[in-house]
Length: 369
Image (cartoon, rainbow, N blue to C red; front, top):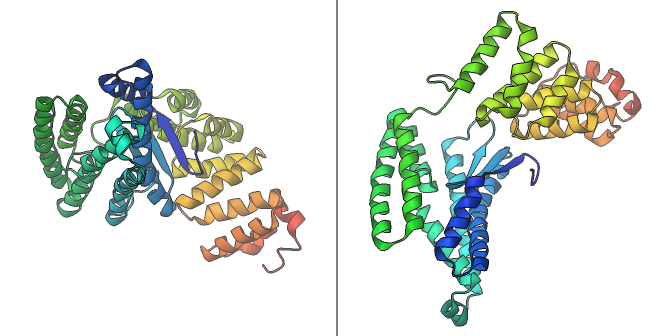
């Protein structure tokens, strides 16, 4: 589901269960359960919206997952530098503070006395604001602390951050249980589990090191391709791309399948798998999507993928490809703009590009080149 370009949203069943359990713990009627669950979902979404707005200000693609720990917004493609990541984390905290401030403006003594919906929404945002200011990983301040320590000390810094988070979370869980605040205890336990995983694996995750079964399968398929067994690779890759359990594996499988299919001159198969995937595509897969769409005459879809990919990385290949696609669609101004972008990015043989049949209908407007 896409809210606007370069954003993919995934909602896990654990998120719905979390909201409903929260409503059941506090509500006095069945109707109130769903009202409180909707309010909590709104609080989480507003917070994540603050993150993704900052990411989009940096012209980067992003994905939003709502799960059992609230929400998580991630940058697609190369990671941002430290100060930009800090701004992204701050964006969620600021969004929550603004939501609480807006609710407070409309509060009245009667709404506070009756504990109505607006007052509950205000309290939820205040609590979520302060939780994200505490050094609990993976909450915002905890993430910023781990990022800072990693920048200073490398992987050992991530372990130091995990240790700080675990100590603080254990203390918070104890206080929450003693006061009967079960939701606070739940989030503290969640932070303890995340911090423990961080302690065990302080190095940022990649496809090297200890591999899961799906990652091993992906490596085996790559080795079989390199050894010349091309015929036996596409089918299991297709299955892994659409049915794999791990997001990163699915993304890499899609990218590999599209690349291999294009190398085998099977653009329709490449285009099909790129269209079926529901996950945000890696930058390399977006490039393959542009090429596959061009070769299968899906010019409008290819141009859309090219625009999204160009927001992640401004490459000469994408500029030329988008110019060709815009030429096919007779979009004079856009084709001219992409050619100018390609020229600025160092493409020397613009005249050779313009000589392609894709620009036959635009020969007049391309005379400046």
